[in-house]
Every structure is written in structure tokens, then in C-alpha cells.
Amino acid sequence: MPVISAPDAFTVDDLYVDLHGIVGHHLHLKCEGLNLAGSIKLKAAAGMVDAAEASGLLRPGHTLVESSSGNLGVALSMIAAHRGYRFVCVTDTRCTEPSVRMMRALGARVEVVSRPTADGGLLGARLDRVRELCAADDSYVWLNQYANEGNWRAHYANTAPQILKQFPDLGLLFVGAGTTGTLMGCARFFRDEGLPVTVVAVDAVGSVTFGGEPARRLVPGLGTSRRPEILDPSCVDDVVHVAEPDTIRACHRLAAHGFLFGGSTGTVVAGALRWLARNGGSEDRTAVLIAPDLGERYLGSVYDENWLHTNYGTEWTRHEHSDR
Image (cartoon, rainbow, N blue to C red; front, side):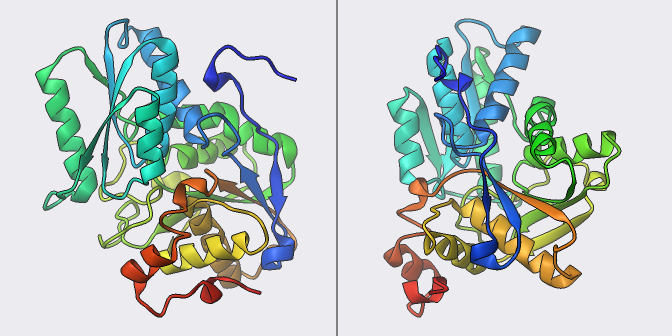
């Protein structure tokens, strides 16, 4: 049994769910929500804070500030509390209420923006507010997950090698694209190792990350309204876009079999199935999907009938999402 003294010192890295009984393909879902922050963002948060401390950018008395749709904010709240920093998370109205409450319980100040900018959407408004805070107080330190190389390096050093250790014959890897930290870290690792792994980015319809047209997005996690600076599209073999109704159907399909995952996972599962249908299945290739978090933070949205009816129409019923 592990004994820890830091909240970021524990995580389960080797749990996979074989989705064959649910989706008809041997897709191995890597569960990244089994740590004290509840998501894969704990790796990026710890990596970026460690690098900032090592470089002298972050010192005692400083205040961390970051733009987050939820999971990174929770992870940074936890790390900041343990290491003695103040933390301000700038989020928007799509952030789930449980995430906001968790951040505040951990001592963070949470600012919620509600008015999008004309050219950058809600993310643009969040970034403008972060810049305002930093300009007003030089003790504020912005890690900037969208441009911080420590974001992708955390997955280059940890997530990708963990997958390779478990699946040395890996042929397909499906990764959701948000800040693209996980995507870039894994894609660069397998490219540098010279391994024949096809890396497929899964993005949300309405995201501009890979050049799509901006549109309303309600499920937090994947997609952006501006291209992250750390993204290098040349490292990615293919991209598939998923509409939010398909994301939600995939979440409910998994839940109908007892697996409660978050919206980002639903997007990745739906995207993988679409890609496989378009490219002839996966029977001859070992395939892994990355599940960023679990579903308990989405009980008031993705899994709530009233939220679904309000945002996607009264025709939406629980029966529609289930394959039973």
C-alpha cells in the first residue's frame, strides 16, 4: 500500500477497460481519472509547477493564475494548497459546478467569465482576464497551459511510456485535443521512438484547433476557440471531429454498462468508432484510447435529463443514449 505526503504523488497508471463488450471493438481505454485530482491534468499541473519552480519563475509568496475549463484548475488548486501558493482560476460558464466547488474547497479563488470576446469566444475572455490580473500584480505567475512546453513534456515522460509498457505492439492511439498537451506529448514520443503508431486526434465540432469553424460548445474539456501554441499538426496522423450529441450518446452508452466517464472520454470513444468505421476497423491493430477523467463531475450536465432537454431539445430521452 502506498504511503504519500503530497497529493500529486499517487496515481493509477495501468488500468485499462476493454470496450469490446460495449462497442464491438477491442479498444483499450486508459483510465486517467484515478488520482486525487480526478483527471489526467494532474500530470500536466505537476510538471508545469515543477518546471516553474526549478527555473525560479515561481517562488514563495507568488500567486498562480491559470485559465481552465475545470480539471486543470482542480489539479492546480490541489498542488498550490500543498505547496503554499495562492491560486486564481479563471474559468467560464461551461465549467461544471462540482469542479468550481472543489477548487474553492481547496482554497482557490475562482473567477467565472460569461461574456465571450468577438474573436476568441469564452476562452479569449478568460485569457484577457488572466492578462489583466498579471498586469495589475507582478506577484502573479501565469503558467499558460496553451503555450507551456511542460504541458506536453509531462505526457512525453509519463503517459506515452506507460502505454508502450502495457502495449508494446500498439498500432492505434486516439487522443482528445484540448490544450493538446496529452496529444503532443504522446505523438512526439512515438515519433521519436520510431514506432509505427498511428496517432489520431479527436476534436469537438465547433473547435478551431485544427482549422474548423467556431461554433457553440457546451461540454467542457476538449476543443478550443484559438489554436494552442504547443500544437504541431505535423505530429498527428489524422483528425476526427465529434458533435456533442455523439459525445453524450457515447457517455450514456458506457454508463449503461456500468462505466461512468466524463464528456471528454465520450468524445474520444465516439471519435474512435467513427475513425474505425471510416478506415476498416481495428481487428489487426492494437488500439488504445485515453480517458481523461471520470463522470461524477458531469452529473449535472451530460447525465442530467433537464440539462439535455434544455440544450439539445425535448426529443432527447435517456432511452436514446442507451444501447439496451
